[in-house]
Amino acid sequence: MSDRNFVDRLLDGADVEWLALGELTKIKAGQAVNKRMIASNPGDYPVINSGREPLGYVDKWNTADDPIGVTTRGAGVGSITWQEGKYYRGNLNYSVTIEEGVSVQTRYLYHLLMEMQADIQSLCTYDGIPALNASNLKKLLVPIPCPSNPERSLEIQGEIVRILDSFTELTAELTAELTGRKKQYNYYRDQLLSFKDGEVEWKPLGWVGEVRMCKRVLKKQTSDVGEIPFFKIGTFGKEANSFISRELFEDYRSRYSYPKVGEVLISASGTIGRAVIFDGREAFFQDSNIVWLENDESKVLNKYLFYCYQIVDWHVSDGGVIKRLYNDNIKRTLIPIPFPNDPRRSLLEQARIVDILDKFDALTNSITDGLPREIELRQKQYEYYRDLLLSFPNPEEVEA
Image 1 (cartoon, one colour):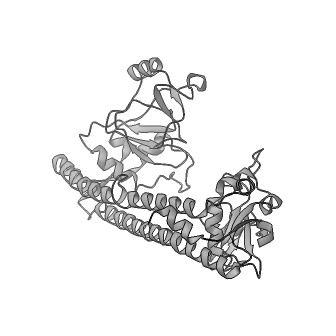
Image 2 (tube, rainbow, N blue to C red; image 1 turned 120 degrees about the vertical axis):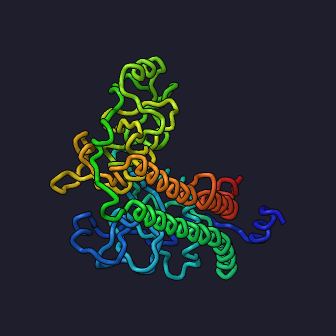
Image 3 (cartoon, rainbow, N blue to C red; image 1 turned 90 degrees about the vertical axis):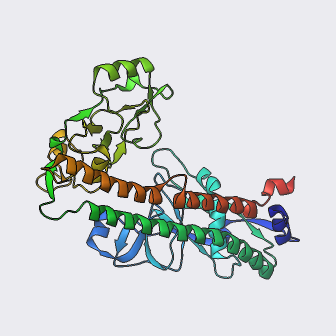
């Protein structure tokens, strides 16, 4: 039986009525919360505010068994949150609580709101800080199958929930497995980069080579389209949204510092110390924010350096976390060098460690294979069936 026939059979004879969300639920904001409050009251209860993930954990709660939320302000405005059990709902998160006596399943409403994300975001205002007014959210029309027959309505909702939850549960299991593998990878990485006394010496990165950066590119020299991607700190390791001309690229690459294939680029601001191996594809990188060590690999393999960057402590000498890595900070940062008095043996040991970590990394983080790919496919499958099961004719189509 085709997917469409299954849906038709599920809804056979069921009328669908579009009702205002405010008729079905109580919508209200949580309580004020900030980072100082979280830091002063550490505990086990998650804080749900303007994002889908907990902002932190505190020792008190203000919400129990009321899992659906909608973010009210900020970059993620209109996003749907789901948090089970007891937790602290912040003032940037609306509760969406089904009224007593209303025949709507909580989980059905959650999947429905996820399907209607675009409709919810169209209710938001984007002048200044993005915001969603509760009065607008209450007017959102949501489809309820045969509301005049609560028993039949709940039966249909329950079957839809069963199908969709089977996908979300599988995705959650795969995500948990991926998280476990990453923890396992981090454990083995840390073990491999820990050495017995006498086998290792901690050397400053300045011992490896000089810190380099690309020539400064002015804003007026960039454009939204072009031949050569220009990576700034916000797009480092992602997709470029700015470009420079080939003429400028060829000129600057020939006259100023430019990374060699395999050298490791690091972020000197933003997410401090994020590392990306330069693959040689034509690109240009924002000066001072994205830098690299010039390295001929006579002492340290670039790939070994890449893994060391994942464990080093990017701190200033007084112990305070820095907001920017200056060249001197980088050059003073220490990394473990195995058998430093025997260069050949040192490079062989580095290569052995890199080989093990490469294999583990491929198993854990491959984009086209393994768990991330499986999670992506399951998410697409969930979205396909959610669209199929929850795409009811809207009121305008019914009237036509």
